[in-house]
Image: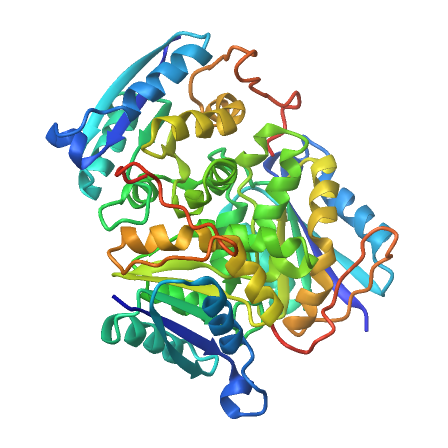
Length: 179
Length: 179
Length: 179
């Protein structure tokens, strides 16, 4: 019944130990506040290397059965930022609406939100969502899109996620029709 | 003078006959209310199989000369949803602004709008637009984008479409410049 | 210290001389009004031919060291419009947030804004941004996105751009974190 959620920090500096990983804990803390159904976190930390990011997503999905995988970091335009490329390389299909809405919400805070290349997609029974590296932006982005996450995980055959409606009113269309 | 419009329903269940096709008739009814210039509908119904969707779009475009092809269904994140992939595979160029605006309008109604992967593109003299399967969302999406459709069909060398301005104020820039 | 900025007009008619190039001068004039740091313009004019557009971007980037390259024209759905394809072909990574925001701002002016396929991306130390051909739309689009441009050019290792805050409040996050 417990849904496994992968939390993947992508950061050269956090991986080297010269910088404390704040993105991963920010995601875990946000999920603890919002999810009311049973879940457990699988945490990974990799440097900004596309093959290592891809391998981490594939393992969290295929080997550990995470139905939701949330990444943080590596979404900007810097040469080392390759998280969106890694995500696209291992996903079966992309969901452009996530990136569009997260950028739109972040734009209300900073004009540099358009520099984020964050995206989302599905790999088998896993939904993969890219988030920025900055902890405050993580909360803004998750709050913007999470109402659609439980239904998406339903549609790809994942486990059932329930949210605290005071934090996120997750929405499941009444009809059995696929959209 | 008459513009041919292809209406393509993509649905396993409607194709098997276990579910009545409501998307195709919703598109036809919307167009009847809005278009004031002569047109005729060519209707097709295929299951959620990428090669069959691609073949239907290609036939409606190349063989029957439809200058507008509107699909319904198969745009979600479920494993069987492959209409956007089929559309991209047979289009010469993609028009991301359609999907962006349709998702944005649908977001005013349901937060799961970001799960829709609907897109649009052109194949030769045909404009192809993906719509969701749900009849109410069809009307919302067509109303959001249709003001730009007649000019787009002009630009790709299709026939002339005119709309009832009480329903949709279609817009053609005065200048002869391409944008 | 001077930043080189490439201004690339893509237009069959301007190239043939049957139409005066208004897009290139509109970009140059906008930049003159907004930039307060030293810069110089390198102007090019090519017809709507993908290989020529690609070659012009590559030369402005690799040979002349332009850290910002702004194109005008060739972004619509007409068969001759290929600037986005040329841009994508020569860029290392794409920045979808630019096209999304520019279309959204242009939508406030004309409903046909969704027909624009304009995008942005980076090639090495160069940021490439597509603008429409129409001079008034050029100003709307640059004003919409430019606050993020100086920081983006910083991130890809380009020169420092400063703007007149009465025109564009360019934003550089205080933190040294990449997003």
